Image 1 (tube, rainbow, N blue to C red):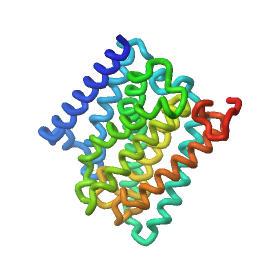
Image 2: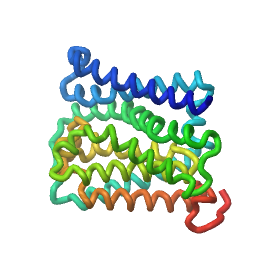
Image 3: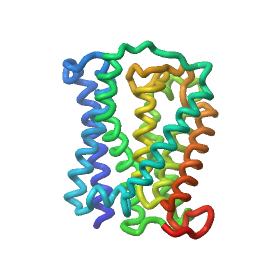
Image 4: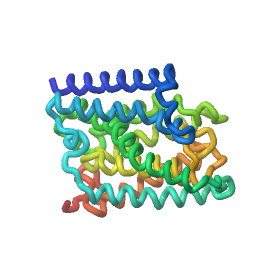
Length: 279
């Protein structure tokens, strides 16, 4: 019964998300009062906010607290480690594209307004995606008993990667890419690696932190041409994400964070690289 309830919640969330998207497309006057420089960003986040509300409210109806969907035992330490390490690695990745990154000259008043909106919307958007693409599927597949080792987690990892990829196929950068396969591999890899990290750590709070840091970095620090994150960041990268360097970088980033969390005692025994370690 619990699995059917979670499936129903996922389906209902997807329907509400699509309705919100269609409503904005068909009725652009809904967002007309929003300043033009924020309009695109807020428009793409309204469906995510609606999805977050539905999942949060729906979890009460199926008697599974959102905190329980997110993690077996929420540990702020894992969020801080994952978020901080990922921020440093994103900065290092930017150095790989230094030749194609240039300042945008964004006006301070515009940047500050964007910063305030991003600070509110991005954590909600990241949480809604992690709840939908990973937390609910994990609950459907394993119930309260999360996968105890990497082999048992493989079906969930592959499913989550594919599920994460499908809606991102409509992103503007994939349409603008000369080879759409590479950004598709990037999105599948991000989704699959996030599922692995969540299963290994017994929770998706670290992945939510990474997802939030990633999207805030794109929205505010280094955006790119044809981005679905329609903001004027401090810098613009003229190279589209999802090339081979980006794919390699995301695997390195997840590997470094995985090892960092294991050293901090946040990885479950069946997933540990270096054997037993007291949590």
